[in-house]
Image (tube, rainbow, N blue to C red):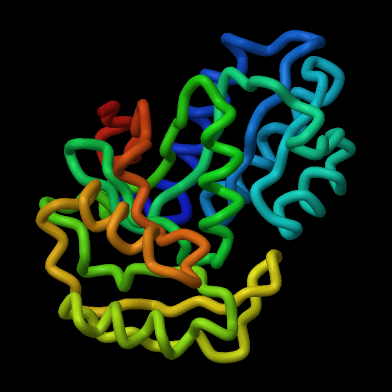
Length: 222
C-alpha cells in the first residue's frame, strides 16, 4: 500500500516525464506551490542545464528552485511556457479545481495563464464528484475583508479569516466553508467580480488541461 507521500511523488515523476518531452535550452517551465509541487521541484533539479529556467508561483517555490540552482525568471520577462505544473486541493472530472490551500492562488492563476498547458499533479484522494468539501480560498484586499465576507455569506458560504496569514501580495485570505458548488465557472466569475476580491481559488474558467492522478495502480490520466 503506497503512502500519500509516495503517491505524490508518483504524480510528480509523471509530470517530469512531460518536462523531458519539451526540455530545451530556450524552454521555461512554470512551477506551482504546495507539497506535491515541492516534490516536482526536487525532481526538476535533474534538468539543470537542460532548461532556460523556471517561473514560480510563490516566494516559497522560488526559493526551493533557486536552492537547486535552477534559474527563476520574473513572469514579465516570459512570453510563453509549454507547461505549468501544480497540485490541487480538489479536482473534478471536468478538470475544474479548487486551489489555494497554500495561499498562492493568485500567482498560480497568473502564471498558469501564460502556459500552453496546465498539468495538475495530485493523488487520487483529490478527485471529487463535486467541488466544495475543501473550503474555497478567496484572496481579499485587507480593507474589503468584512464587506467581501458579508457577500460570501449571502451566497450561502461561511467565510473564515485565515489567521496569521498574509499572501505574497500583502493580502488576506477568507476560506469559505459550506459552499454547494454546482456551477463552478459561474461562481468563479461571481466571486471574482466582488469589489475587493483579488481572485478566488476556483480554477474552472481556465481549468487544468491534463490531470495526472496517482493511484495504488499507477497514474490515472484525465
